[in-house]
Length: 251
Image 1 (cartoon, rainbow, N blue to C red):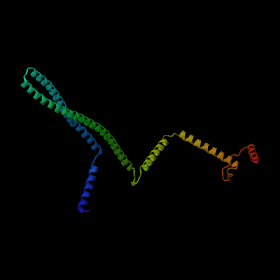
Image 2: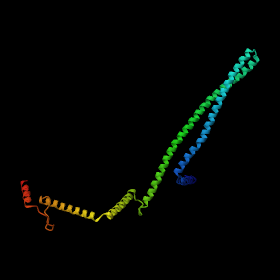
Image 3: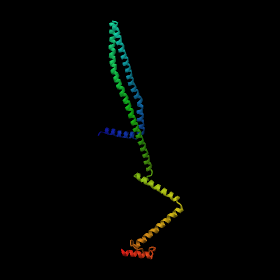
């Protein structure tokens, strides 16, 4: 690869990157919509000119048709008056009028077709502009959402402490932990002494119930007997012990 080719490629890459960075999708789309709307008046003027030509040809055709009828009447009147010279002159005018009428008729047909095509093109352009406008507005909204997401990402990045590899989940967990700690501090700050005492009483009751459950399990042989160092446990009544031993012997 030649040096000049490499230089051109580098220049295209450099300026292309600069242009791409300076492009604002929202501004470009908004300008595109304005440009499309600005073309509508010119397009309407073009359609109006085509339709004006059609109307002018239609008037010329009507005038030539009336002229043909008028010349035909004059020819007949001249013949009745035995004025062949005048009749011959009118016949020449009639033939020319008929030729002009035929040409005008063909021109009018083309003008009518051109008007229909122009109107259709204008309507298609308006529909296309409306679709493009709706699409552009959707893209603009997406661009705004992308900007908000970028701002959110920058905000989340500000929580990072020297770790550029932190992920969104880590940031979310960090925020959740902060929120949970703040909520816990708020609950501790607003909790009353009576509420704390009730919680202690409930815990004490739960401990007694657990101790009683362990006692039953040891008596039934489901757990090893408590060691001498363990705190003494309440023993069942004598009658209850006999019943328990009798049941065990039966099994």
